[in-house]
Image 1: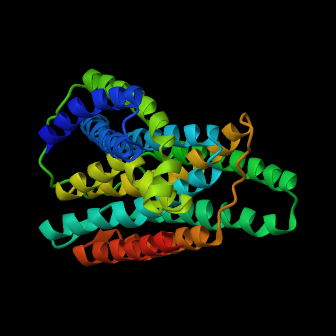
Image 2 (image 1 turned 45 degrees about the horizontal axis):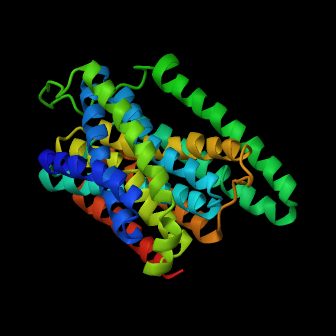
Length: 350
């Protein structure tokens, strides 16, 4: 599989440059850009896996989520610059439901096919549940409800205030988990896993992450300019492109890494990637994009559509009910994936 991604990368990067200069058909370039970003994401995933073996599951999961979300953050910034506010909000929605339902579900399902029951840190699961309830159900629903009786200026003021609070609480959450209460809630679910040697050294892994992120930034800018044409030709709405296409492409690194970790019975890392990435999107990426949008011609309030809000709230509640016991199996994974497919059909038809 790694060889396939390497071939995709060797072919995809030059084609992305040449195709853009020679103005290849937009649909073709859209496919090339997406496949190249997925290939780059696989290398980012392998690099973060190597770092995970060095720094441990919590920090490793955080690194994986960060670099996985870096792809989407870059795509979203270029989308904001192009005035595609709907695509950005939809991609944030897609990240939340994609990480909680698709990534989490596939991890539980694939891992569950190999191991009857898989366990992960129940204390982390409960801690994350509270943050998910706050980040999605409190911080995202409040602007939606209040904005109905506020002017655009006041709605933007509310959004900026919530964005700052979210970022501060996210920093506090990291401080709590990685510094002040590090090791307090210890339950190593991966203790029976055979110790592995990292594929790449720490320095090589960091170098690959940096180079891959730079190339992703270049291709992401090109990808954003294909959205309008692709939407018209394929009959896709801006909402569907953001929720499904951008979210899946932008989070490809996390998708691959989380499933791989679950297959190796490293559920602490898999869950940290899926849920940690969701929290990072909701509490850092989304509010950061709100603040960044203030520097563009069109500001982005933290106000989602009703279908987006309902989808995210449902994903959070279902994930909490299934994962709060610190155990998973293939059927629970299938349930999460089924929920994602139902939402995907709904967004496609909107």
